[in-house]
Structures are given as C-alpha cells and as structure tokens.
Length: 310
Ligand SMILES: [Zn+2]
Image (cartoon, rainbow, N blue to C red; front, top):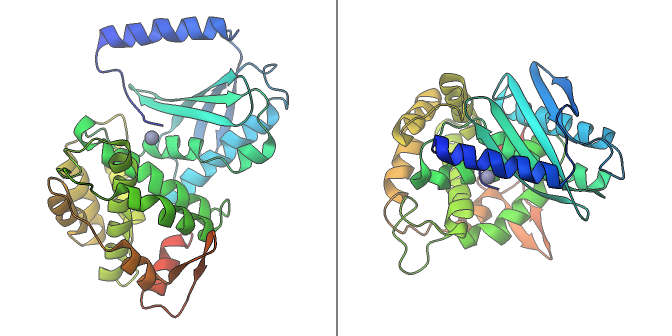
C-alpha cells in the first residue's frame, strides 16, 4: 500500500483525469463529504454514503479509530488536516490505500461495499497509510524506510491502543520478517527494490533499531521517540528530506547513533541478522500458529517497553 506523490505536473494531471473517470464509473459525486474532528486533527471524509450495505457510520468510526491509534503512537496526529476519500468496490473487506501529501495530506482507501464492522475493526491498511504521513519523503531509493516504518509502526501502534494483541504482532513478524532478509544477488536496502526487501526488510530495520535504542537507553527511549522527533521537526510527508537528515534527527532525539549506524551497515550490502536469536532474547517463542511470550528472557523488558503505550 505504497504512498506516492505524483512526481510531475503532467503526471498529476493524468492522475487527476484517471481519478475523475474512476469516480464517475463508481458513481461518486463531489459534495458527499463530511467533516469530523479527532483530537486536534480535522478530517474531511469523502464517500458515497449510500454505497455501503452497512451504512457510513461504521466507516466513520473506523477512520476515527485509526486516526486515534496513529495519534497515540506519535503523540499527536502527524498533520493538522487530512482528507480521506473512500472508494466503494465490489465485495467485502478493505482492499488497499494510498497516501499523498502535495501539499495537503490526502488518503485514498478502497473498501468493499459489503465490508463488515469486524473487518474494519481488524484493519491494518488505514493505520499503515496514516503512518506514512509522519515521515518526510526521502525519495524512491529509500522506499524501504517509508514502507518498513509504516509496516512496523502499524503493529506496535495498534497494540499500544488495545486494537491488536501483542502475540499477534510478534507472530506475524516471525512469519513475515524472514522474507525481508537478503537473497543471493542482494545489494543492500537502498539498491534492492523487491517487495519483500522493501516492506519486510524495512520493517526489520525498524525492529533492529527499536531494540537497539531501548537497550542503549535502558528503556528510556525507543524508535517511537525518534519518530516523534522526526515528524515534529519535519512536518511529515509533505517535506522532502535527505535520508541522512531523517536518521540524524531521530538519533539526536534519543541520544544514540543507532539509525545512522544501522543504515551504514544495511544500505548497500546484504546483511543477515540473527532474527531467531533476537526473538529468543526478547522472549518470543513460536508455538503452534502463534507465539508464547516469556518474561524471564534477557530482553523481555525491552519487548514489553516497545509495546507499552506512552
Ligand atoms: Zn505503504
């Protein structure tokens, strides 16, 4: 569910034409919008209220809940104003989303017209898209940072908000994160643009950074504090920052050089960290289709601190 800003006026115009055509096809009309306020963020919702069999209210609740989860993680919502455009498609479920900030924050999500409240309650897509709003645009070569952060933050933020279980998040990471390890021919995160390296290789970078910041600061700080400083200083996705500035800003906030050091190691060479060893130290053991969490493991306090709401 990548975020992307149209890189040129021509492309933006082309995108706008496609968008209008799609809107016409789906029977969406301008003016079917409503505004809600979540904390101190004004969210404009554009949707066809008659397009969904469950009505518009569960969708508004989902947008409100997702914004609250992201605001909780970052300390406040990444932007002051946001427009969410909801597109109705056949079927049920949440189909996907995209984030833009040029310059106003704008998220487009595609929902099945028969989406259920349970599907909205367990959705990851909108939290993922909203997390994209908190990171400056660092360019396509570093898409792994943007997608990795959104992937990693989604799980932690939802646990902190009570919307997902800690075991579920670790179980998913144990299942999926090994896909983000380098395969033969890999040239590092900046130069290997496969889906697995972009999403799960990027998420692995985030997990390694989070654990290291917690260890070095004796659980005073984590990646979350670095990310809060980055969005505060940059304003988020609307800013164009070199990746070095992003990482330096995060490191300064937590008093380590974790992000810069990790980037230097992983950016242009295929590094394979011992993920199984790391999870064992954190007190996470695979059990059936889920995990068992142990509080006597050497880094169990780090694991708990990562997932604790702050
Ligand atoms: Zn994404």
